Length: 201
Ligand code: 5GP
Image (cartoon, rainbow, N blue to C red; front, side, top):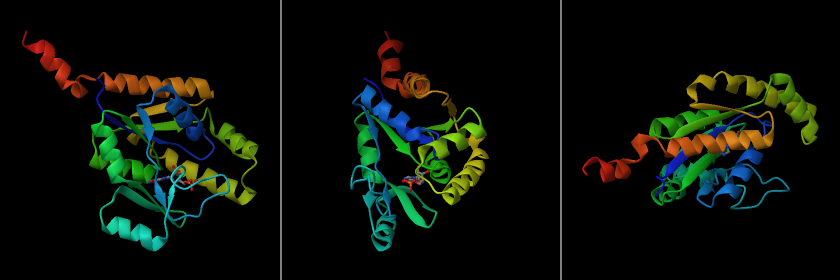
């Protein structure tokens, strides 16, 4: 029986964390993604309950007041937060809960759940990140400049993370993420029932 695990994955826009997470979810039904609440409007390719739970600012503030979120931030003028019940229920079931969130939220989660695992996806170098962002063709020049500046800010927090996942190629990066989770699940501190089984024979 694997112990439940809370895993955070962060990284700058364009680094490929969304794709890595998608591939991870295909590997094992016990890997589940936490869907965040947000006050930003849906993008054309997004849907309620799959990409986010879309809330008005008032509804989001009500969620904060009712302690329904384990963490929340205001980012680029919008609220984003992680619903508490899903995370706690899935960990109890022994599942691996993945949170795809930015740096401030990640550090708050670590404070609240010191046992969680913080992973940060890095590109091979900054120029490559810029190339990938431009290659997506989805952002204006202004948005690209803003996202690159934000990436520089986020890189200042790399040492707060437990693992860095180099994304030189999506399949390698996914394998690295998978290996981290497997190793974390085998840590002695997460397997007290196995220890008990063998300790007193
Ligand atoms: P976007 O608007 O592009 O979907 O997300 C903007 C940023 O917010 C991304 O870095 C994303 O990972 C982060 N984010 C999404 N959901 C949450 C959340 O629940 N909490 C925090 N702290 N960040 C989030």
